[in-house]
Length: 336
Image 1 (cartoon, one colour):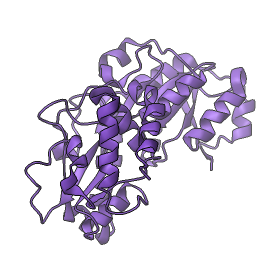
Image 2 (image 1 turned 45 degrees about the vertical axis):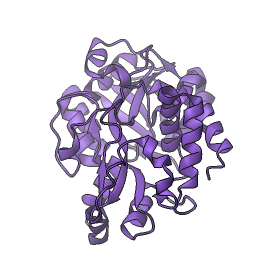
Image 3 (image 1 turned 60 degrees about the vertical axis):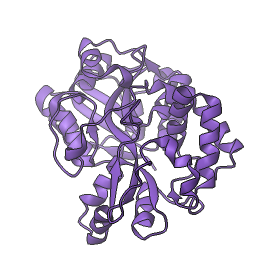
């Protein structure tokens, strides 16, 4: 379902001529907290932010259909694999900005400036808080250890977060070792994958498995919830960052790209630069339990004590480049 903000309807936005003091955003993020960022930017610059929200596939298809007539200046989506799909679809153009290049770490920006990261989350390993983690369980590779047979809760292999994780593992481990890993984890599943990341944590807390895989911000959402049952789940589990003794943990992002036919490109780049300001980065992090993409930004909330860790440094573009190989790897392992 598409959602419209700032009283800009889809047909009106599409028909309206370009106005100097506006920027039109298609966003696959669905967080009310993002509205604060738009409002702050408008208050500081006088540039109105017109927003259409929808699924990544809806918005990408719309951009392709609209072509040169698209009113969109920017496209925001979640996950490096989805950003790569937009690159392949040809809906981005390079955004030339020394501010963006300087503030966004190299691993979280496209090599040709077609997109830049906005916020980050790590895909980590969880165990139950009342049980001591096995001394040998440190890395993603250890999830394939036969000692975890029947013990792992994780989302389906068709989930984009798992596809991106596998895409990175193919890059750092090589295809053969990644294939062995996929088979090992498939053998160790506690149940047929079901639900989202929060559901894996709920199953772990309930004793359905002893290990779970989830993005950090889903745990943060449970910990910050007004629902006591969610808080109880967050307290019942604990996480660690894998591969801290070697290459570092897998990190994914939400990101933004300047559209190929942006009618307000100068305003759009100015807005992109605001999105990586300390102010906007703090709102991203504090409101949705994400990590700032810009180093050194102070945040608060449940994930704030866990910002210091080693990330792999693999460029997020790899997640899209290896997505097809990742899917094939899971399929050969009969990973549900």
